Image 1 (spheres, protein in one colour):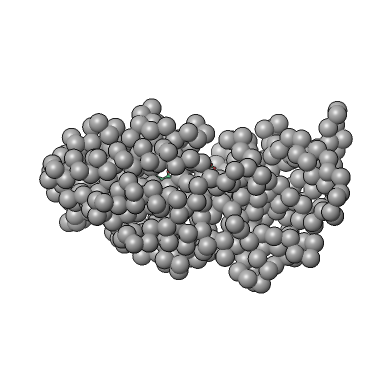
Image 2 (tube, helix red, strand yellow):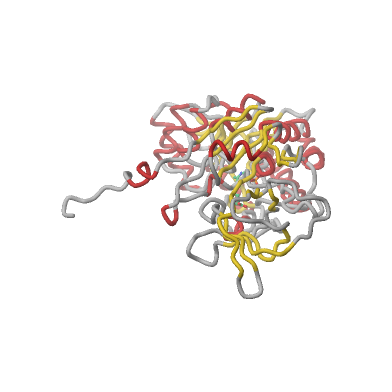
Length: 421
Ligand code: LLP
């Protein structure tokens, strides 16, 4: 459920007509709903009711500080994967002891910044990283809590580019080697081994892979405890999928996922962390775009819109489906027609949808790409020297620009010309 609905014939973000935002900021832009963000966070939080837990929002999904602050105010911790994300979370007011540092290639510099600024735990992904982390902690006279990310070799049954839990993926250490690596960690003076971390992929629409992975984590917990490690925290990653096409069967609910967690690892008495990103932010945001031209091609009509693959890359990169709806509600019974919906960028990959049924549209009309709140704005680029598009946050009947559209001068003046030119 989200808070983007037609009211009085116009798509609203909560109580604000999307057309009013467009008139104020110009298209294209992203708009997020506070109520949806809060609701999705709460669904996870309540799903883990009864066990000691922290929901650490995977801020890679949507990292604007206004979004982070909204979620942190609701009680969320943060899962970060870079120095930039760490500093952003801190800038949004998230305390270090609610920030978990994940990621497969943390540098010594990134590690030091987080150690000095405060951190809840590092999720260690390899032996060499463990040695660097230990060295940095020792240098600062600290002992840092860690989990080790294990790769359970489980097929997440999702798009190959976002599956992370198979042995051929770069993530974590093979679960078969876990005992050795934990023994190595326990011997390092700068580290305190507190738990296990696992994350098998993103946009999972079936709970079975989670179940398999979490069973393996439960077994490993017992084994490592028998080896003398005080395993007391399990970070179970993110990955629960969202319905991208409203006509399709919906993926499992956070409550089903919570029940699964309790069933598989609840008996261990560990504190549980989860790192959802997409399910919190995905359907809390839309990208609004204006029609530039309607062009008649050979046997098809193209809707050329002002948003492009640089603004929302998911269709080009993962063949992802996003529902696309007009901002003005179509009259009941209006004849729909198929359009290829494309951006203005100079490559055919800049296609959002082929032969998508839409009501008749014309130049100047606005359309909305649904489910664009996660991995939308954060994956944007300036390809074709297009400006990054603004982000807007709605809360009830108010809206605020949370990242303005830059100027062309901002973009152009970032280049510097060498003296020999
Ligand atoms: N934790 C870790 C360690 C992760 O790598 C990820 C996502 C998450 C949590 C959050 O997963 P989520 O709950 O959002 O599924 N750009 C792609 C998605 C990449 C996901 C990468 N890792 C897309 O647009 O589909």
